[in-house]
Image (cartoon, rainbow, N blue to C red; front, side, top):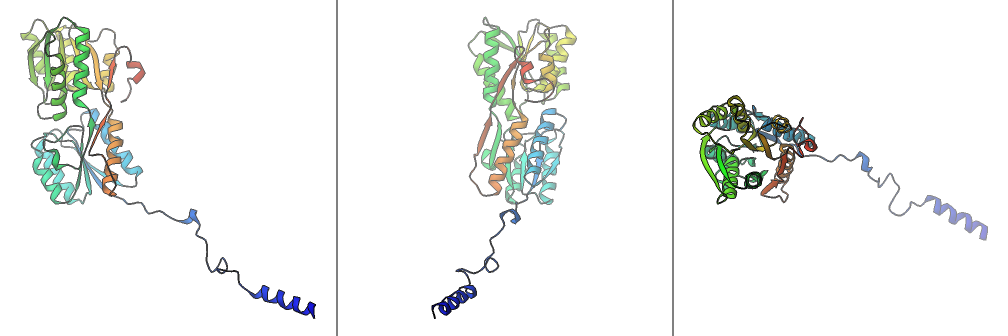
Amino acid sequence: MAALLLVFSLGLLACAKPAGGTPEDNPIPDEEDEEVEIESYKFGFSCITMDNPYYETLETSVREAVQEAGSTLITKDPKGDSNTQIQQIRDMISEGIDAIFLCPVDWEKIEPALTELKEADIKIINLDTQVQNQDEVDAYVGSDNISAGTICGEKLIEAAPEGGQVVILECTTQNSIIDRINGFEETIAGKGFEVVARAETGGERKTAKARMAEILKEQDTITAVMCGNDQIALGALDAVEEAGRDEIMIYSVDGSPELKRELAKDDSPVVGIAAQSPINIGKAAVTVALQIMNGERYEEETLEEILYIDRGNVEMYGVDGWQ
């Protein structure tokens, strides 16, 4: 009898289903088979001019980071014309961009484009040089431009402790350069320096060369030239070398390979560069843009570190590419 009961019990156990059902009833998801859907966005990119290697490198950095995130980038080149930039931004609005990386040709004249972008609910990540009305943009990513000018001023004071005559080559339509020049002038104020000449260059090498050549004819004694960017500095260098005025010290802000190669020469008038990194700025800008688009927390202002490069450390940063 006991044997019969044992057989009967084993039969019941064989027929019963495990609690919760079989694996077929409640399959366990295979994590490797799950696909995480990545949101894709269409970004626009508009800078001052792609003829400047700085902006070419910045665009490449942005493009690589955007594509790595599974999104796309539309680039327009206004070639230094503010009206062209505004029209190209309107074209990108029509093309359905979700956000734009924007470095204005003219920090004041860009206002109509900012208004139209906001009306279209397109996010604005302002790069490198600020627009005049920062309330119109969602975020700013760039260098600490006042600090860049300050560093150049401090280095000039070290090089010429007794003071001297200074020339300033600027661009009053670009806030980044305005800040650099302001930082420089505030630093050398009261230190025995006199600004004997200043000129508007539009941020361009050819114009800077022409303006510097004119100044060299008028000024017999010049201690140093402060240049708002490397293209301006290269123009100043062209004029200085053609005039045989190699005693003049040239300071700049950017850190382009071409100017670093000049800095590496023992006899070059170029003595120092407050260097920024378009590569890092581009990466940081895309990080912020994606945070904005995904509704995440983000920094409204991101300032990348400025590095001072002179003849003593230029080889460490390299002369064949941007730092």
